[in-house]
Length: 147
Ligand code: SF4
Ligand code: SF4
Image (cartoon, rainbow, N blue to C red; front, top):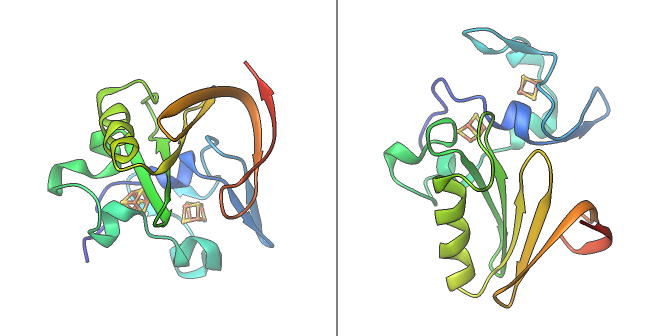
């Protein structure tokens, strides 16, 4: 298992919907503390404690692909689908996210690619962009507003 080190990408890029913390996607968590990561680490919500991106699990990328360095957070929740989120300071059009997206598309997996301004779904190799989306916990598209 790798360690997060100085990376706090998921504390901004991902939504947290916990009874004690409701944080929107791409909004920095109010508990982020400069230089030391989570300011409430020992009392952080269960959903935070349970989360590990695929880089942290060691199932994605090399040592240099830590999300704050590569620009992409990979969550391969199911064998047939994967979610990518742009790390703070990056967009999904940066090198890292696009490389990851191309790799997973080539594997025939459905890809959700999030950046701060839009979301792209690539299913069966066909990409569609959305301004607003609603997905369920398994990443299934429930509703969308096209760009
Ligand atoms: S994005 Fe991954 S490596 Fe970075 S802080 Fe979150 S779990 Fe750790
Ligand atoms: S509570 Fe801590 S671990 Fe959870 S998102 Fe905020 S800073 Fe990150």
